Length: 240
Image (cartoon, rainbow, N blue to C red; front, side):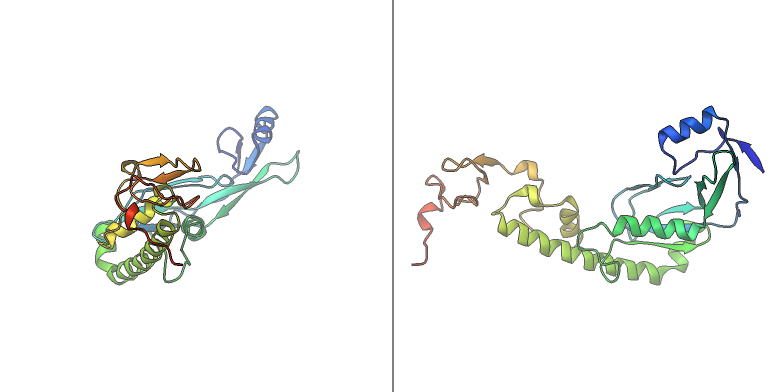
């Protein structure tokens, strides 16, 4: 069945193409949507997730922060993109199933994460077929939730190790620490000097090279000059 172009949002078109389609009164052919085609995305990841897919409609997805005790959920259905066959022909709607959409949301978000291998170390995100309520998920998918919690903790351990390395290499520059590294250390109960908010760490300009350094440490990471006013300056000894 063909509808006026103004009814759907034609994802996948440029703004100029979309405007021209409206001006030319282009029509579209809508595909049948299966009302049972739904998946539930489950998150124990402690951060809100906003994913935007610019070439499909619906293409905006928001998942609230979750936890092992109270996972957050998002039910997704099918989304569509629009195939422009010919300027004189209606645009054809090409649907993508809810499985494709849920899988793409998780993979596109996680694959860009530092330290994530999408196997044993990844954020606690997964999806199941159908529309499920939170009580159902907690009761029926306890084993899967435990598995994802373990994978998330594995990922957290990788982030903490990377943060330790970055902190040591930069002699305590808080700007190299990713916020999720702090979240990881706190979740694992690890006490690290870089866990505190970086705004509380004072960066001063080195008097010798002009670079920024952490005032808590006596040696500049850039030029290796020693701050003579630091209480540990007199205790520094270099190997001969």
